[in-house]
Image (tube, rainbow, N blue to C red):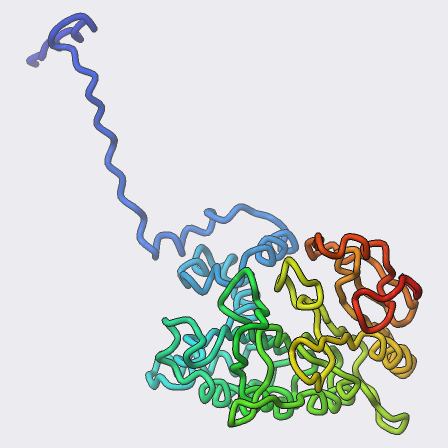
Length: 366
């Protein structure tokens, strides 16, 4: 048998020595191989994986549905979490209500069967929205989408958020209002199967067909006798939203009125809070917090167990507080960033409830 002699390796000082390195070739596994490879997912108790999924942003699976197909076990855990946290933007809603194809028919059928929570996010309509969304008839699509939701028999939770595209000033008061009443009213009155409603209109007020203001508070009052949980944040709010007679039944056991609009102004603290309805002009700012406190204390005694009635507000100290109607106490809201207003430094020691004006005296319970 012939034997081939191997030449010795050149010495590093030899002119034939080279340091060129060739990386080994790598072929990415096919999607099917990823799906089949069940051992790719580390074993952890389902409770741990659910905590991981809850920490992911809502857009994680929307950006790439292939992230659902890591393994069969991952799919069984991620699929329920994904469909309960889908953000229905104008683009997604437009596809659901206008596109006609077998794929979209299957998607709509799957949503009607399994969707339990819907999160609608709008950042302007018409000329005030994101330029990429101006091709969608968002106002009409939102109404059509609500009619579609009536068929979602498993649906129990609806979150409707209307803000401005400006991420820093989500409730910019200098921007024009854009949300017509015909767009938001169906979500309040038609979805009888819904028991949890989060209505966040911090970025706009509701308008009529001519663009004029609409008093939305009377539309919210019937929800007290239908829902189990209600959270409301609006630029303007008054007693008509929560005023109820003793004869009217109360079904809501969790009621949160959020009067803090977010970081709107770093100069004037009033602009960061909701104001009373029917103000003569935007600069005649008066807080509804005192009258709402009185009404919520009365309402909390009639709410079913376990009662929770709270008001989130910006305190003169610059901290965001949560007032509890059952205990009549305020506690700092640690989920919100503390604020500082240089022009109102002398008021930081004031109590939370001192009257309608920010510069009132410091009497009252903090």
